Amino acid sequence: QLASNVARNDEAALEAGSCVEPILPGMAYLEGANPGCVTTRFPPEPSGYLHVGHAKAVLLNNYYARRYNGRLIVRFDDTNPSKEKDEYQTSIIEDLAKIGVKPDVVTFTSDYFETIRLYALSMIENGLAYMDDTPQEQMQDERMKRQNSKYRDQTPADALKYFELMCSGSDEGKAWCLRAKIDMTSDNGTLRDPVLYRQNTTPHHRSGTKYKAYPTYDLACPIVDSIEGVSHALRTTEYDDRNAQFMWVQKALGLRRVRIQTFARMNFMYTVMSKRKLTWFVDTGRVTGWDDPRFPTVRGVSRRGIDVDALKRFMCSQGASRRIVNMEWSKFWAENKKEIDKYAKRFMAIDKKNHAELTITNAGDGDEYLSTEYLPKDPSFGKRLVRTAKKVLVEKVDTEGMEVGESIVLVRWGVVKLTKVEGGVIEGVYDPDGDVKASKRKISWIADVPENVNVVLSEFDNLISKEKLEEDDKFEDFINPDTQAETEVIGDPGLKTLNENDIIQLERRGYYRVDRPYMGSGKPLMLIMVPDGKTKSMSKLDGKLAHR
Image (cartoon, rainbow, N blue to C red):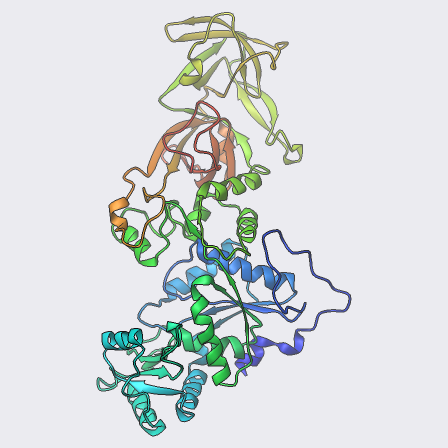
């Protein structure tokens, strides 16, 4: 009944006259897909946090479900109670929301444990599976040598007896596992009688101690995919050898067949994706947690400032490829910049330590304002008021080589003609008729007024110093020792209006995400630099780390 409610095949018909959108560049058509009759699934294991590789998988599944007017199932593959926690389950749902994915239904493999157990019994009764207590290393050796287990010709009655012993949770049953009887001579190693069921007495985070043995993913996935009404199972190319096993299970059990479509998993340079390796960074205190901006987790890249639409477009552009490549983060962030540049409001800030004072002798005393657009390219975002004053703060690096008589441009204000450059003292007069285009030196500034905001800018670099780790590399030998830097700046008062997660641009510095809003003089505004796909800033304000 549960499966039929999930599949909802009686509601799959497409409304008359509907049509599907053109396929996105980079994506492939789903073989045999009919609009209104497509159901995809994303089956995460609730044993860790989602990373950008998972994001690609779920976004592709979501894209196909929406394009074909179908349904997306998010199914928690909770078949290993030793690794699973409610914490991870909750985090996955939250992370899916962060990247704009709303499943049509959320299910759990554990909802089908009894059904899967009955299918396992059916396999035993029909001579398609047997019980085995061969030690693990010996079993692996026999599979490599294509040697049959001594239990392969076991009678169904004996197999049933040992299956019940395994499921009892007793010590005597601990050594036993259920194996499929497929083909020990096959060139495809996954068909050499894989394990389908094992004992595990750890309480399950949903079903408690009801079960003492659990199906493997290799048994549970083809069964649940079929009975939940999945039409297309999207799997990464690393599962290519296991696809034959998937299809064997469905055929052996007389289940409805599910089409398989493969895509390449996503790897990034200077990055580890392994749950074990990422956990090491957390446990050793080298990062602040699973949402650290240096992490490739969904939480990490979200905190770094990824735009959801940019993420979707980037992942879909890689969608059809079956070739595993090490992607450059710069391509990812360059795509992101195209999107955030459309709405990142412009502000200015000056280095707190390395700045200079410029006195504009004919300016007001700080009670005057000028009106400027948040986004010069898009007036629809409105305008804001910027304080002007006789004394303004400018970047010290921008004053190098200044000369008396030179006309400089204060961005958004206008031209100032320098009248004195001597011993660190810089003075000038505001020229309302000055030619902005004729002046070569265009610099950022803020009025030196008490209402200015203390701001901390955080930059981050890759955790791994080697572009691609080889199989025999110890990742601990390639840890980048310098991955975080902070700069204190003084920002204009308009920054006080920002909220957490806002994306802005500090002119001539770069793009930033608000990690913590301004909360008073003792709690400055915290901004995290959003990489723009370039290794260096276009201005002299490079920051302390590469922009990646």
